[in-house]
Length: 219
Image (cartoon, rainbow, N blue to C red; front, top):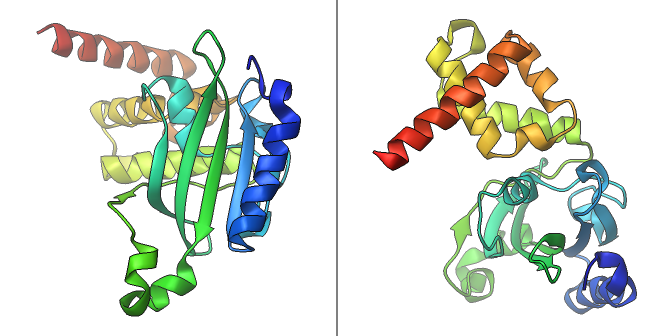
């Protein structure tokens, strides 16, 4: 398979079939990752789970994978949360072409909120195996996705922008780069505005950060 379109009929049937099998609490999403990330969703069933539809963007996890931070990328049976606080048990599987380039993904998000309320009696159903908690942002625009990435990076730095030092801003830029924020169109401009720095300063911090990582590895 060289692209999602090569098997689009089968993949959309798979989306429909999985959602039918597991019911209204199971969202199944097909992403085409060869085009613009701000409209990667090409098929979705039970989109009411995360409030998304065809033409909406992927999540931060997909960005990190495209950024090259994960070799395999597949994640199974992890917990995440929607904007309105519902808990999802999710799996994300990525598809590659013959050259090994990622061309798409299939994601399953099962709403276990009601099951967690009855966790004591349904524990074997809710937690059938080992789980990893992952923070995943479900959004309906890449602008919202970038806002979520900025907020998360600032929380990791632990300071408001007004009192950040040069080193703090450099660390925040490195965190955002690692999460794929600069793959978003005009992401650099928004980050510059948020940190109150120039584009020159942004690129300088990026290069300085990469050099520091390289020296650390070589050392």
